[in-house]
Image 1 (tube, rainbow, N blue to C red):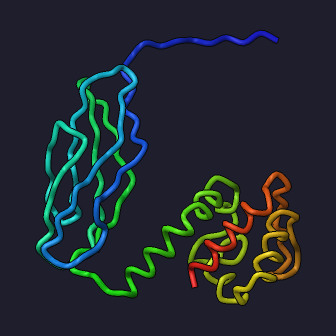
Image 2 (cartoon, rainbow, N blue to C red):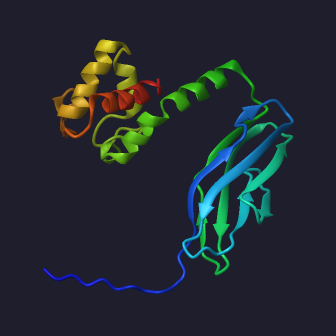
Image 3 (cartoon, helix red, strand yellow):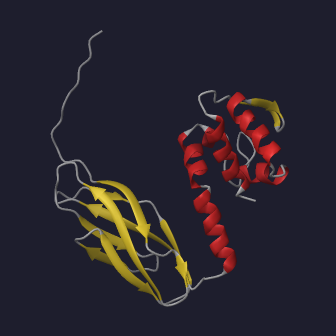
Length: 198
């Protein structure tokens, strides 16, 4: 078998691997340092345009920005990273809850952080082709699954096995495909993430 590989010269956009905030909630005024991890394939100098979620945009030549929120609100922050040739890429969103320091929010964010590996595993598989978080799709929503079953060790084990072996009949006539390459501890992480949606 022959294959042909063509190499085209030209500028490729920067690559963004992560965006973080030093604080994602707290009392006002809320000082936050945002940091983005980015690199350019051609090693061009990068510039950054931060959308602070409140109508303000800030330009920096360094991959970080210090900003203080003085108004209560939920802010979705992103950054556009551009190289010298004008190629640009947008980061994922980091959410900041300014003026909110409640115990409930702290607990919710701690649960989200603890279950982030399960969510990441779910996103890496084909789960999202049949399930949505809050809406019925081909299969039930993840929230519906969390509400239907009690969270205990036996149920987590049972549902983990269903993810690995597949299933039929619990939610209608559509088969759930098997994921035999998934390890039991990985399936449990996914199920724990599902239960965190309750």
